[in-house]
Image (cartoon, rainbow, N blue to C red; front, top):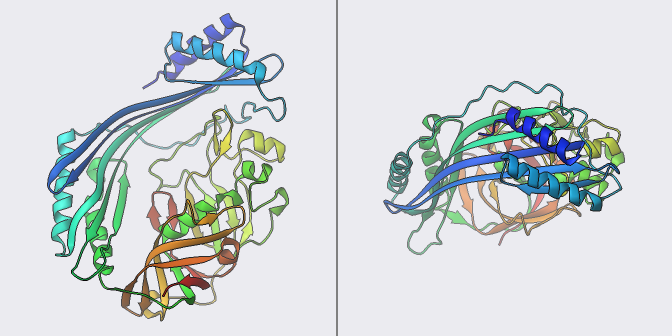
Length: 446
């Protein structure tokens, strides 16, 4: 782990020697180990130690140069500072990035500590047991072709010439299992599950096995459905993946670059059903990978995005906040260009619904578990999407897997068509979200 106080001290000395008055450094390092198995035998073991350090220097003309390095000893830092200093002569003169006004503000207290990593042999043993249990759970489950068990330690730090010093460290473990099932005369069917936890000992491997098995078995009996308009229920993972695909709605940098469905004047507009509320909440207790500061050193926080259907906020860096007369939200990533991205979505009910809906009593409703081809089937600038999905046609307690269907529409119309936000949330790696009910969505089936 980088000793950030020591780094700050010798960086200040080197900068003074080079005549550099203004600089900042952001760095992260990840030490990861992962294993894969195949048909009862170890398949692959990976170990990596990756680090990335971004050094920015401003000259007397207030233009900025950027360089990256993996070497944070005094020699490496001196070389990086020199290169960034030279590059600053060619820096942009319009909307030059600057220090965050909150780079020295207090951050939230998140009680985490790095956990000791288990031996590779222990990881392989656990994954082999999981593979065996999963293939034994049903005769049709022929193999688990995609699987992995990993553990990772992450260190992050930020410092600048104004005295800001931040660092944090965390650990987490994850497991994923993705099956292949085959029955004579039928198409192969697949399903998967992913779990993550801070400690390997607390990782819900049994739950991952059970979820992957149940989903796979539920997809064995499938049928085509007629094309038409359907009432659709999105699982947490499906809705969050769609929300992430259209995150330019809330991204201040995208808005300023005119690459968004929103404009600076969109705040306060009704963009969704009043039943829906959404926030970006990196400090949510369910966020295993929570960060207390962003790439500019700004403390992270809960940022309301949609409040009872109304667009309530944007995600900002220090630069976008200054240009839009707002406050930084702790969503900046620094590099050759400062970018903005969400951390961890929290979707929850807004205004109370007039009635309640229950899948156990639903008729002719489609439950979407997972969306595919988001890289190709989404036009984020037009708001349109056309995506294959895995899901079931629900009639009461009877659920039949749907074969080869696509859902299509306009994301803004989808948000307005929400008729129910269930009260019970599901936890996913990208956020916390309940199931979302939407009326009259177009489904291309048979």
